[in-house]
Image 1 (cartoon, rainbow, N blue to C red):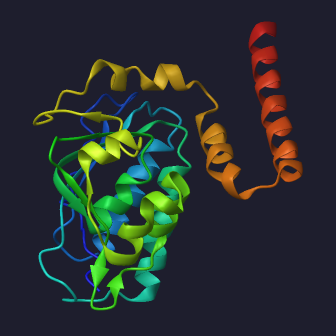
Image 2 (cartoon, helix red, strand yellow):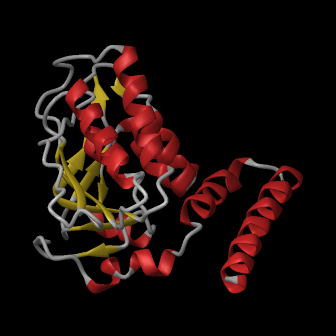
Image 3 (spheres, rainbow, N blue to C red):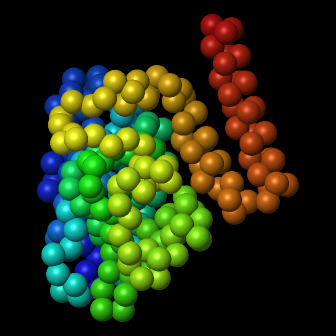
Length: 237
């Protein structure tokens, strides 16, 4: 299994001390490594800081260059999945910008993002190996986000998803020719639009497909109570 996509470890913290820029590059052509996990965890550390302001930016590119060259140990895969889970729990918007085809771990990172940009003609490819498509959490996220019918050929046979199809399915949000360092205006406006409860709403959304109404009701009421307490405290001050 070439569970590929190490970072071109380019964590950008060039913003001010009060509001650092938060970005990382993930290259889908090289095998998963401990450095990949450490870089994503480092990005999450910065994003979780009280002074941080988003969006958190993932710059993604590349697909595995060979099949079955190496298989990462299960302990490393577990650490990687935990790092991706941290991305999904950030209270800042996570934005992915894809340049060229995107596969392996680069695709896995893409699936954690709240807003996704890619070039026209891009193909999204699942991580594969000698045994077929790697049965990691990318399959879970794809199916959770698109449903069984839309993901069947990709999950079972490794069929790529063209960017234009991904846009129609809302797996991508926008296609941009040769995306550069400047982000579209709607992306820079995301933190203000998201408000203070982004992480809670994201989790409620991700859980909705697998949670019963009765179980979800308590979680949503608790989230509403937190909002009322926070807005009430703000009004009182």
